[in-house]
Amino acid sequence: MARPFKRPLQGLLLLNKALGPSSNQALQVIKKLFYVDKAGHTGTLDPLASGMLPICVGAATRYANYLLNADKTYRATIRLGQSTTTGDREGKIVSETALPLLSEKDVVAVLKNFVGVQQQCPPMYSAIKQKGKPLYELARQGIEVERPLREIEIYALELIHYDLVTLTLEVHCSKGTYIRTLAEDIGKKLECAAHLHALHRLSIGAFQPDQMVSLVELQALAQKGVGAIDAWILPMEEALKHYPAFSVSQWWLQILRQGKSFVCAGLAPGLQRLYSQDGQFHGLVMVDELGCVRVERLLGF
Image (cartoon, rainbow, N blue to C red; front, side, top):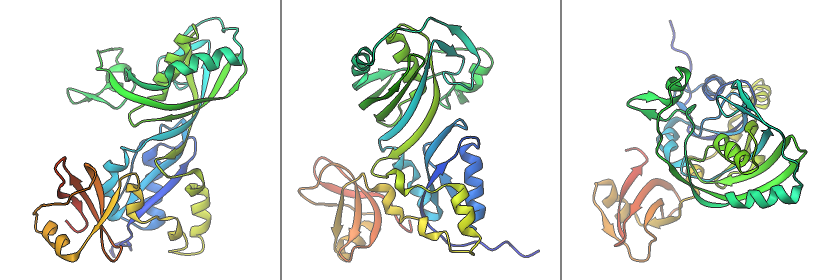
């Protein structure tokens, strides 16, 4: 039997995931549409969440973990007066409380308490592992374990709509922030039960909503033939735009490819995108406090 046709495509696709399918189900459709063997998503969205789901294709999958470090913006709707087992509307209602009779001004004042650096306890219904087991597996068995607090930062929290029963917020936050937990914590500050009713991811890092494309749109374009949807594939270095960049001569590039390091004064410590002087992207390097540059991940390595 002839092997199915596969393409050596590489880059980043910003999928506007719809409600319903899991992130993995959406990924499998993308692999078939683009005829690629290798692809992976970053920043998983639950089936009941929608919005930006970055999918790395081909060699870009090697950079997927670096995209996870970017900040994110969400549109979140919180249902007041009810708490659930999972912290969102997928779970069973476990408690109900009276709705707080607050004005928009009162709610905005409460929300200000959540802006800034803080410690957050991850929910039991999460993929975080303890002794090799995801916490959600323990939660489904009715087991609750202690979870270490995580430092997160809420950069901005804007009230979009409030009608006594629901709050709709726009949340700009750091990586690792659980919006379900934020919803429950906001409810506690408002002195009522609460859970996350709806979630839409608007952006990740520098990527904006108008750069997303839906499965329905891609499937319609694909009817025109292989390659008609390739315009939605961004260069893989676009996934790393939140890191600073610098360029080197071919001589220093060769030094790095030999596994050696060199010192370059004036570079900010941390990860940097590496380019050759002709503007070609070559990967990521790490710069230490002394300006020593070493390979983090290079193309072809």
